Length: 417
Image (cartoon, rainbow, N blue to C red; front, side):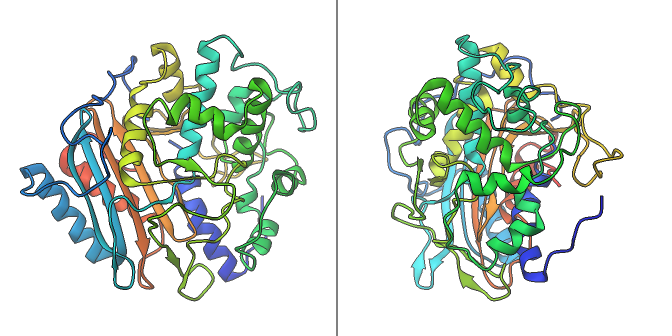
């Protein structure tokens, strides 16, 4: 299908969003069939019960190596700030922050930033908990909770969570980009967002292929609220962020970010400008628009990536829910949209799996981050980056994390692109 070209500035902004989320959206090499044991909550230097601060000096050998890799990447990518935390078996290897939040204000590890699609991993785990408890089945169709959804009698909870509904992605819709670019402070409602995919025919019959769409998680959050009678922010807090001890991860119904704040800057609209408080209501459902800091980001992926909150069976579904083999070009969907899902790289249940790594990688409005966990090594890498006017396009946090992963686990490349 031929897609109408976007204006240059709007296209740049949409590409910045979708590079991490669409490219990320493919994505595992075989992950172990059972969940790795939970990360130790009381290990030396673990975030549980302490402030998020730089690792005490002198650093160990691995810590010095990681920090050296990060400093070099910061210089080469011309980043404004880099925050990072690496743990092995739940124990801190290094936590640090390099660069500036704003001119003259040093970046600190406890500064909060927007975490975007990390919320999808939390929501996917929440859904699987409800399945574990036999409150729903993954293959329940959604017409009872989402009666206005086209094809509701054919779309299941599994399809929403795995991006196999065939719904268009509003983020890559030129009409949406034309509205978002000039109006970064606009407050969007779910109805306004869903009007874009609903205006298109489906890419394919539900369940027969794979394509990334933010609309799926807007709808899944709404369905979970109706299933449980609990608002999605409270539901995730009760089931995921609370049990994992993520005290600095929270939903925000406004563009506010709890202090201290890691400020963001971007050239998405053609000039280098601050974007910290651009309205993120378009990114997902109300109640799932989260901020966090680097210690919580690492703890989040330790818990999600190890299956700490799930039964072994549910964890296997998290990382391999039936997407492998789906995708690929068809008469109605180009290969650039219906990305081929392979064992090496595929989308799971709200997570991405790449060569055994379980991850999420948000990137939008000047913020970039990644949380990645390798069960075979019990290795967690969390990175957040912000831009200068000269930073190259793409998710630069991925670049930093990929270099760290190559040093610590060369047998499992964190090759997302």
